[in-house]
Every structure is written in C-alpha cells, then in structure tokens.
Length: 367
Image (tube, rainbow, N blue to C red):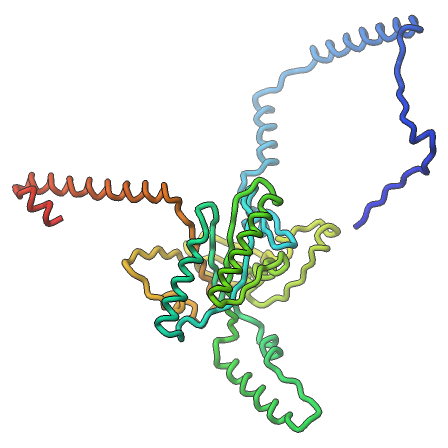
C-alpha cells in the first residue's frame, strides 16, 4: 500500500520565507476591542468552571475501570501474544524484549561417537573451549529439534528422475530401495541443531554490532570443530518456528514485503490456530497435544550418550539446553556460601552429638 501526497507547483513567492505580525501601535480601536473580548472570554471560562460538577465515587470507579481495561493486564489473550518475542527482522535479529536481542546459527552434526578415543578427547576439549567463550552477559540456548516431514516431500527429495540412456533400471531400483528405507526408517524425522545467543542492548543498532562479533566467533569455533554452520535469516527463523507450531506439515508462506500492506505482524504467519495450557505438564497446540518436562541432573559425572539417546527416540521431540556463564566474583561468593552452609551443618551435627552423649571429636571425624 502506497500513499501519495499532492504538492502545489513551485513558485518563487511560495518558496520565499514570510513573517506575519499583528501590530497594536497603529490601531487603538482594535486594541480596545481585543481587551473587551478577552474580558468576556475570561468571564465565560470562570462561569463554566463554576458550573462544572464534581464526579461521584461511582463515576470515578467506572472511569478507572475503563482505563484499566484499555491498558490490559499484561496477560496473553491470543495465540500471537503467547509467542514470546516482540519483532523479527529480515537480517535474523529477533527483539525478544525491549532490551534483549538474539540471533541464531544452525549447525550440522559431528561424527563424535565413531571417532577414536584421542579424537573424542580433542573434540570434547574444543567443545568446552567453545562454551567457555560466552561470558556472563550472553545467554546461550542449544536447541535440538526432531521434526517430522510430509511423506510426499521426502519421497520427492529421494526420487531420481529418468534420463534418455540405458541406466533407468538402476535408477528405479535405487529409488525403490530409498523409499523402502524411508518407510521403515525414522518415520520421516528430520533432525536440526541450533544455537541461539542473546545479549542486552538499548537499541537494535547497538545489539547488531555485538551480535555480529559473537556470530563471527561462533562460526570460527564451529570451523575448528570441523562442523558446518551458517547464520539464519529472519525468514529462516520464522520458518523454524512455523514448523514447531504446525507439526502436521503445513507449508510456510511468508514475505517481509507483506507486512506493511496487510497490517499484520510476523506472529500472524507462524502462530497456530490455538494454544491451551493449564493441564499440568500437558498442553494443546492446534490439533496436537504435547508435554513439557524439565530435567535438573545432579550427578558427579554424565555419560556422553545421554543427549544422543534422547534424540534417538523415534518421535518428534525438542530438547533445549540453557547455558548461562557465571561471573567469577559471583562464583566465588556461591562457593563461600556453600562452604558456610556445610560448616553450619557440621556444627549442628556436633551439637546433636554432644546432647546425645557422644564425643564431639568423634562426630567431627565421622562428618
């Protein structure tokens, strides 16, 4: 939608600046007339103010209720409002809140499980260095999405077109073999891996410069690991969200050029028909029913197969790992606080031992 404003033709007398003033010195009659009008207007204003009645308590309450409804209570009322971001830009930057901006990078898998022991150690150390790159001011989220695809699209991708030669029988046999593997394989699941990093900034321009530096370093770190990666544009990020919200495989149709003429936002093109929460860990999204789980694992060691075993499930699953670096001073305070708590527990146990008739030194040795 375009707007056009008609302007008059340029004339020299229109382009020259002119100043208009009202002079009182040469017109005493005009001056007296203005004073009379001013006095009459002031008198009318005082009378109107005197006739204005005060609002009753019920009327004030009614006006306050109308203002409250107009402002809203901040709760999401539509499926679009449930999606927690403010704006998505074509360059891939997402405005999450007023002062938080994020960007996303998609990366391929690395052949870790089949590597030799020394190679596994090197890959793990490089991965630790990669995670330690992010300081406390950067929030990081690793997303692993097992997403189903339409069978027609999968078959079209593995189909080998015939050619005018003597090898069409081989092409047909190979295509049939691939379709057979597809039918009894992972049920058409496509696995994607993303890393999203978020920073705080006063505006998009300040966020863009910092996100660009982080993006360059992330891509370089993935290159050291031998992993192929590339940043996502705004369209690609919206397509990923659309795939998450429309698990039945509805095609994604969108262009940033459609926003201004239609008056819609990016959320209108990706939101499902409905959201429904409030049933414990279960939720409804359109025609699909899902469940959310939060895992907090406290263990002295973790098997490197844990995440792989979860992602090997033959079903649609999304795993998000939220990583937040802790500032060194905050880490020291946390450790000191834990030590203080342990000392407090030790003293309490010793007091219990003394009250029970045991020797305090024996209790201290046992603890």
